[in-house]
Image (cartoon, rainbow, N blue to C red; front, side, top):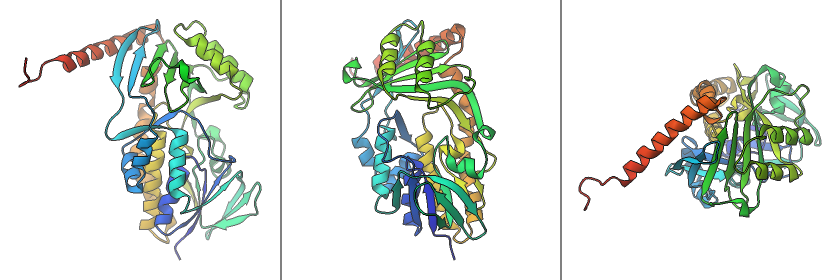
Length: 381
């Protein structure tokens, strides 16, 4: 008999998307989320191909456009606060939304298709050739045909089944932090403004409703680092932004004043295998790629690929998981290979590299302005 009951851990992006598609293929998905409710806030993410096509097939692309952020352009500043580039960021085949809004739209699409359980997580996983026995923190144990870990970079499923995170984590030597701002903090509600200094990048994003300040900076790992130590996070952000002009002091103060701002080391997850027996990983749990900004798109695309593979190989989960991994790695692996270059361009280490990058940006800006103002063939003059 084909495997039909599937436990999905994580109700962020990948989890609800997978639940939607599995239900469409006749599976019985159960989504368990550690948080008590869908999480609010969060940075903006761009839904782009191949996820745009997935959103169209789900019938949610219109909803995503309705909750799109107001950011229509990017203004790049040098270390002195002078603008070196201003470019549009929107396109017909992409839409920028907050992570919370994307999660809410996906949850709404899957809510009538799957069982959702909040405020719980798994504490033990044991599998055999016929199924997976799962122990929950709060609810009675249950048995499922398959288990999918869609629970992010700090995946519980990955730790319990594949081993500690250190085996699969590639440290980029960088940190990311965000904090909401007052609406009055925006100079232009339609523009994202980004300033880069050696080893540091500060961004003000209009988001939707509540603007965000984002800090990305290079730094060594702190011995005994605790991702729940908010006082440490605030101290690291303050130290990283010391000496940066522009609005750095104001943004750092907003970070200091917030009771629980976001903070996390930037790292990649790379694994030789995404499945073991009847357990598989999806999204950031399997293949997080920092700095690209399209982790949500990869999660949606991966969810569709996984559901399609399972539906195409009923009764043979091993073959289905092999097909899913082979197909989705074609999307993910090139991003892993390019992450070092992206990091060097976004947050250059030295003034020399930063100056060279900004010089290229200025040249591109001038060419674009000249192209925009040049008379076209056949135009009246």
